[in-house]
Image (cartoon, rainbow, N blue to C red; front, side, top):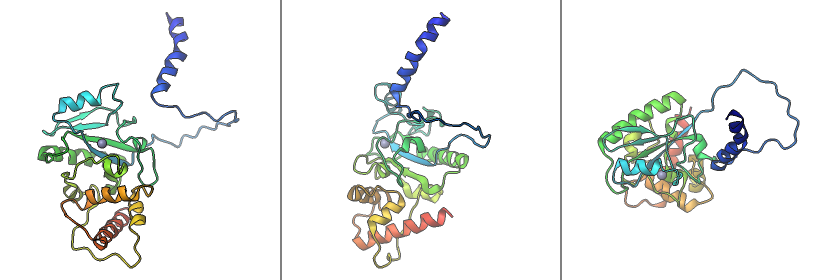
Length: 248
Ligand SMILES: [Zn+2]
């Protein structure tokens, strides 16, 4: 039986490799190995928030644990504040998909993904946001993640995703140090201020400037009906300054 299992091992390993392509080894290169004791585990440095688009926690759980759907997150937070862990934080949950943030294109490798059970139209329940605030405090403290690095799926996948919806209380989160926020009145941006460059400096993809601008407005200007070009620049300028200040 042991020999049989041994014979099956390469087959099992090749099956595992199908789920996620393994990095290629250094082809034919002679690599000298000198093991250093100076290392620890790689750590996430970003938190990406989502809404499930579901009407209840059980439906969301069914999707997020279905092998056929190939989607997951590290955590799912229910409307009642229940927190469900779906993927160990050390592992790479499949929540962001094709994405970009600050030049990083493998957001799943870099982040903790948190799904909030919400249908995308309803307000987010107070108990759910309270639970999220506690979870964020714990995760950011353990990995020393900057508060500015709490973003939405729509921010890292502009034009493709719109979650969490424009009902998400980003301003309330920022009041607790999670994510950036600027309230009006805002001082005007300096002469020659380039909005696309500023959005890229915040983290948005410069490859899709209009979709990035829409995601930026949905996130940071929620509730404000219309912003002039000068107001958009003033908002981006303020957020950029805040990001620089908070990362010092
Ligand atoms: Zn999402």
